[in-house]
Image (cartoon, rainbow, N blue to C red; front, side, top):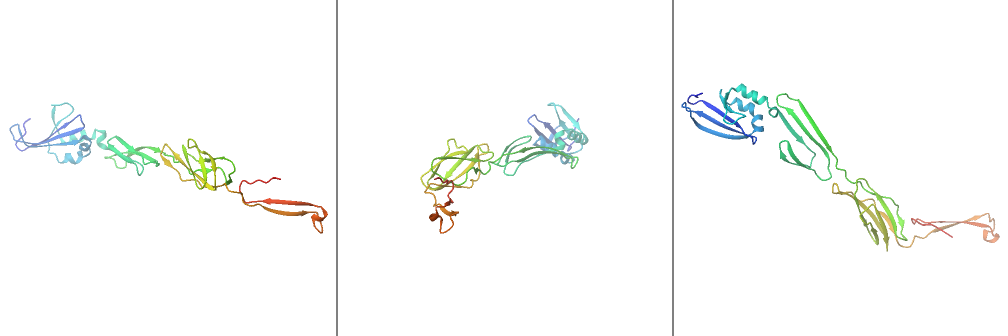
Amino acid sequence: MLLSDGEVCDKLWYLQSGLVRGYHLVADGEGNFRDVTDWFASEHDFFHAADSFVKQLPSRECIETLEPSVLIYITRADLYQLYADRPEACCIGRITYPPGWTLSGSGNIVTLTPNAGSGGVIKVTTSRNDVPGLTTSSQLIITRPVPTKPVINSPDFLLCNPQTITATASNATSYNWVTTGGITANSPGNTNSAQITGVSDGTVKVSATSSVCGVTSAFSNPINVKRSAPAPAALSVTGNGGGTPDFMCNGAGVMLSAYTSEPGTTFGA
């Protein structure tokens, strides 16, 4: 088929690499072409822009499709149908992910890098170009549990001999015990248990870490550990049926009551 002088033909190849190569050709009327312009586009970009692209074509397009060196002439309507028959031409996919995460790659295979300690929803939504509002979606809920603030399972105490205390936290794989003053906490393996020793008063607190997320919690509320001499005890004396002049004269019984604010103190005769 010989094109007349000045007639325009757009020749396209669909390459296996996913590219569309096009030639914009102007015939010279003798079976040759002049003013040849070529271009490349991704198959995705070409078919998503096909609606506007086709409107700019002349009435005759030559398309080389499927098999190399098979040149056919198709109409504008044929090219529209070619566009409509391709699922990827009418559908657009969109990936959303949690704030602070990063995405690399393109197309249907991408890599998401989470933000440490944060979870959220990864969602893929596909929508039709030709039918507004017609969408489908699928999603994954990603949880990245962080350790909770530990609670030390002991009140303040008076340290006489080495004493073991424990802490409780969720989602923790290790614990970091911290002391002040003359107090020492020894926790082989950084577990939730620590042996407390000391030479003077101080405090103990602990944080929890998740090795899965690489995140450390806030410190627990500290507890006070006293190594110095206990606070003085108070003593109250109550007469028991002594009458007058007093219990010491008539040999009556007497009640003694001792108390102190010192934690961990017991009394004995």
